[in-house]
Amino acid sequence: MEIKVLGPGCANCHKMEELAKTAVQELGIEAKIEKITDIGQIAMHGILSTPGLIVNGKIRHSGKPLPSLEKVKELIKAAS
Amino acid sequence: MFGKFAQYLVYDLLGMTQGARLSGAVEFFIYDTIKIFLLLSVIIFAVSVIRSYFPPERTKRILSHKKEFIGNILAALLGVVTPFCSCSAVPLFIGFIEAGVPLGVTFSFLISSPMVNEVAVVLLWGLFGWKVALIYMGVGLLVAILAGLIIGKLKLERWVEEYVYQIKSMGAAADAVKQSFKDRLVYARENTTDILKKVWAYVLVAIGIGGFIHGYVPEDFLVKYAGPQNHFGVPIAVALGVPLYSNVAGVIPIVYALMEKGMSMGTVLAFMMAVTALSLPEMIILRKVLKMKLLAAFVGIMTVTIIGVGYLFNAIL
Image 1 (cartoon, each protein chain N blue to C red):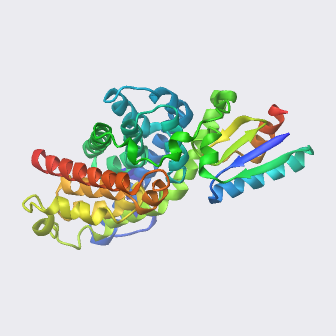
Image 2 (image 1 turned 90 degrees about the vertical axis):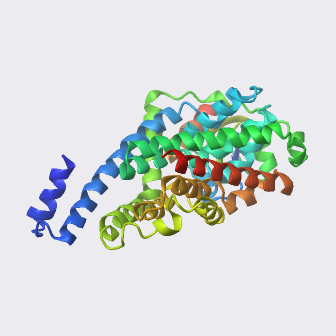
Image 3 (image 1 turned 60 degrees about the vertical axis):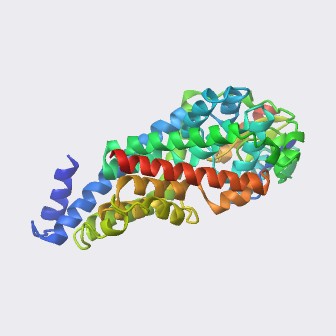
């Protein structure tokens, strides 16, 4: 599984990364989490509001407010 | 209803003397606080539900390849309901341009979004009445449409950083997640708490100014300097407002104080728009996609447009 967290480095983007890590841990699945901070790269992925979460090539979340941990788990599970 | 409750609290529960200056101020403060926070909660919640139907990805699709004018009007209106924070200005800008949204239309959106929103409308409504709220909203949309139209007409595309045009979206399917109505309500609740957490302190300060400074500074304190008779009031207010930066909630206490003390309406609204629409942090962020010339043109056009509507409202109100 491939998870990408996209954000230029605002507080919420760090929180999003933590959420994704915790979710993967608690779900007990194998996943590569990649952090994308370059603005051009973020736009290229089709994210318009940060932070964004992409699981296996599909945008699962973008913008504020952040999803809850439970929601993130659901989003990741739905993609696998 | 709130009035009764505020009276009960102040005179019966706290046992303050009726008719005294202080107790009157406290009653006013409690009454306004309840009224405005209730308004804020209800309206932010309702707008958040509407918002969940217009994520930026959808707005982008609606505006893509739209004609100018119609596009500018739509963009300004969508700016009101589309969630967007200045930290996302760059990916949003690139995404819009890449999807074929005309430059001027993109600007109409970028201008209206931080300036005209439900928080501004509710606070103006609660503190100054619905007429002022409507006027502000109308004027804000007008500024966003006009400034976007001018930028579009001037054909400033060459002043956008070249790399923006080279980015091609990989188009990761954005509409993959279906939201149920319950999801939208959850989103609305979270968004409402988020916004209230951010603005409550400013709102209390604004109401506090209304309640306590009310009787202590002469009503016409500012009339001499910034009333309708002073023809330079508007440009001075805008010149002061441009370098200042705050969100809508932050500027409201200042606006309240200025209006209470006799600054004329057009001047106050122009000041408020200059503070919320033009900010140094946003300029620094936008510099990544705009060349210095376009950034300067943007600030110039906005300043002139805001001064124009300031004069217009001083003349007709």
